Image (cartoon, rainbow, N blue to C red; front, side, top):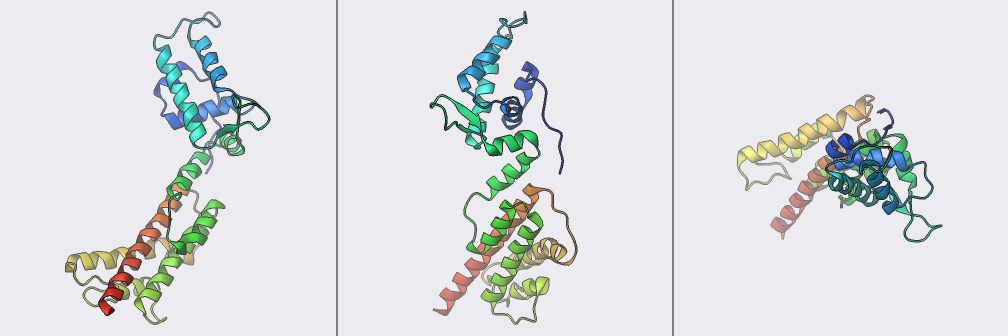
Length: 248
């Protein structure tokens, strides 16, 4: 995925209309070349530019609102770890972090940031390898590892023979009324839906990756596939507990 670097001045109209993350990226691009940055200096600079005291420009009627938006963008950058403390200066000074400089060079990396945020919470332990590949930027292998973890978990929980693989394994494990992982207390329509969900998700996200070259360049989509695998694993774990209680 490629994207042109954000450049150009932060004019009032952009500040008024851009969503905070995009405004933050524009602000980041303007700060990336500076070794030392200070939020107060940044705000005072914009105040001077837009307040009628710089270059003969007329004052903006919504100056306070513009400054608030710049402050919001700064706070967003700090919250994402793109601006951080400067270890060589006192606490009033900051710097653009290493990740921030990379993002300033390639705004498409914002998708990677959002994708990583989606996986920031707890995931099933079986997805540790998938998360590692994702963090390395190998989205194809991450998705393969996530769906492979689902396959292993379904086989182990269902006790089905190794002869059942892929979508056939999912269909057999969640076969309505008699599948070893089927919730037989649910309505038949729900049982059919659960079987179709497992077979469909596995067929769509595991089989293409496993049998032909797929070029994953969207970290958001890869993160969502891993999240889908996490949901599938949660359902399998619940079926295991249900079966364990029934055997007790």
